[in-house]
Length: 617
Image 1 (cartoon, rainbow, N blue to C red):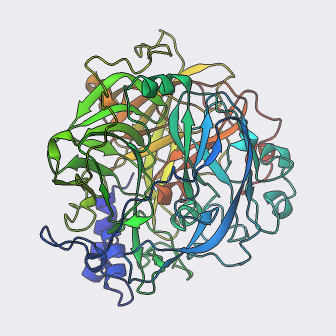
Image 2: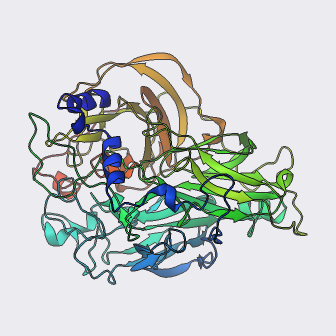
C-alpha cells in the first residue's frame, strides 16, 4: 500500500503548487471568488453577537408520513429550492424527497410491513444538479448521469429487491440497467416495477434513514438533498414513553448533521477538479473529477445552517445522525454536561451510558438524553473537535465546522412532568436484554481488508478486499458468500492511515472487539500477509455496544464484528464515506447459493468471468 503521506510526497516532488491532499481541493474551492466564505454565512459571528433573525430548528417529525399502521405511500423526488442559508441569502436548489430538504420523514411500526413507491418522473433534466465524474464505477460504461435508487439504511432482513442495490437504478423516464446491458438477468437487481419497495420493519424501534444509493453518484445524489429520516416505533419504546422513562414529542428532537459549501448564488458547491497528473499515470482526460474526501465548512442541521433551538430547562431526547459525506464529528457540549446514550443504529442499550463526548462517523446514529434543567437562561453550544480526515488529519476550524448548533434554554418550563431516566433504568422492559458478545468457538471468520491505492490517473482510490487476495474492485467476482442462517465474524483489517465507517447491508451486527496489528499491505496488490496482532483485544466502548449497522474501523486496527445472515440474495458492504464508496470502496456479497454464472450476479468488465469464493479463514 502506498500511504497517504507517500502519496502527498509524490505531489510535493513536483512543487508546492501541485499538492494532492484534500486540503488542496478545499483550499482551491475556498479561494474561488464565487464561493461564499462560511464565516459570513454564520448566524453567530462571535460569542457576543445576537442573530438578527429567527432560525428555529425545524422538526422533521412534524408532518411526517404516518405508516405506523402499515400501508403504503409514494415518495416523489422533486427539484425545489430550500432556504438553507440565513434569510437574506439566496435559496439553494435541491433534489428532495417530496420536495423538502431533508426529505419528508416516515414513521413506521416494528413488524408492520409497509410499501414505498419512489417516483422520479418529475426530474425532467438529463443533466445532474452537480458535476458527474465519468471515470468511476457506475459512470464509465455509458450509464446515464441522472439515475436513482433508494436505500433504507439500517433495514434488517430485507428482500434484496427492496434494498437499493447500487446497480438497481432507474432513470426518470423508466430506464434500468437492463436497458443498457441486456446481458443482465434483471430480476437479480430490480423488482418488476423499479422503485416499488417493501419494507418488513423486522426489527426493534430505531432511527433509520433512507437515501439514494446509485452506483458512482451516491455522494452527488445525497449532497443534492436525497436523504430523510425513517423512524421505527415499537411497544417497548412506547412503554418507556408512557411510563415517563424517556421524553416524547415535543421533547424528542432529531438532529441530522451535514456539511456543505455554497456558491454566491446559493447553489451547492463541491470540489470537482483532480490534482495535476503525476509522471507514470495517464493524463486526466478532462471533465469533473471525484476527490478523495469532501469537508464542507458550513454546518447544516436539519436543512438549516448553524441553527439554534429554544428549549425548556428539562430533559430532551436528541437523536443524532451524521449525514455528511466524509466528515466525522466528535461532539461535546460547551457546558461540559454529558450525553446520556440510550442506544444507537439498531435500538436501545440495556441501560443508559453517560459520556461527555460522542464520536459519529458518517451514517452513525446515537439516541441520547440531554438534561437542560440546571441551565435555565443559558446558551449551550454543541461543538465538534474531530480532525479531518479522522482521526489524525487537520484540526477543525472552531469558528466554522467546530460549531454545530445552539441550545438556548429560554423557554418557560411546562407543567408536563419530567421523570425521565431514574437510576438503573431498564431500557428493554418489553424486550430481551442484549446478550454479552461471546462468539461460540468455531464461529466462521473472514479476514477482510481496507486499502488505499491509486487509480490510472494517479488519484487516491480506496478499496476493499481480503488480506489473502488483496484489493478487489467493484467488478471483481464475489468473495463473501455466507450461507442462509449462518453466523459469522468478519475481521476487518484497516491498512489505511484513516478511519472508515463500514456499513453492511441487510444485517445488524455487534462489535466483538478491536485490536492493533503490525504489517503493511503490498502497495500494488494490497495483499496483507500474516499481520501480527499487538496486545490484547479491546472491547467496544459502552455507548457503541448495541446493535449497529455502521461501525468505525480505526487505522492500524482489526475490527471484529459478528452477525447472522437470514435473507438470501445479493447485497453490498462498503465504506460510508460517500466519496469512498463511489471510488470504489464497496463490494457485493451474496447470502446463500450463488447463481450459476458471475454475469447473473455481478456485471464485470470481463463478461463471462466465473465467480471465485473466499474460503473462511
